[in-house]
Image 1 (tube, rainbow, N blue to C red):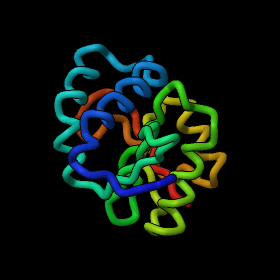
Image 2: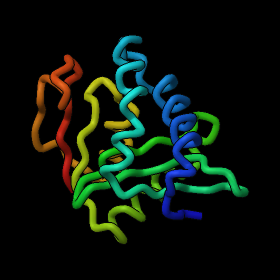
Image 3: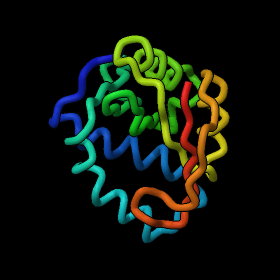
Image 4: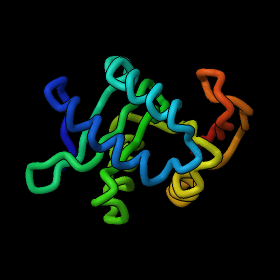
Amino acid sequence: MIREITEIDYPRLMEIWQSAVLNTHDFLKEEDFLYYKERLPTYFEHVALFGFEKEGILVGFIGTSKENIEMLFIDNNFRGNGIGKKLITFAISTLKTNKVDVNEQNTQAVDFYKYVGFKIVKRSALDEKGKEYPILHMEL
C-alpha cells in the first residue's frame, strides 16, 4: 500500500535510507555518507513523500518535487520485490514525474531507471553539493 508520509515516519525513513545506501552506494566515502545522513531530514521537508507499506511496516519511500524524483529508497531486506517499480509507477502516473538524477556509480539504480523507461539526457561531473560523484540526468 502506498501512502503519504508524515513527520512521525521520519525515523523509519532514516532506517530505510541507511539500509539502502549501505547496500547500494559502495562508492560513497564514509564522511560523505555521514554528511548526507545528517542532512537527510532537512531534505524531507522539501519534497512530497510517499511510502510503501507491507504488513503495516514502511519498507520503501519516494520523494518528489514538481516533475522530479528526488529520492527513492527501499529497505535492503525488501529489494527485488517490485516495490521500487510500484513507487515509480505511482510517481509517474499520479504525481506526473518524468525526471530523475542518479549517481552514475550506482549502476543498480541506473539500470533500474533505464528498465522503467528513463533515458540519460545529460551528465554532470559533480553532484549538487559539489562532491565528486558524477550524476546522470535522466528523463522519460
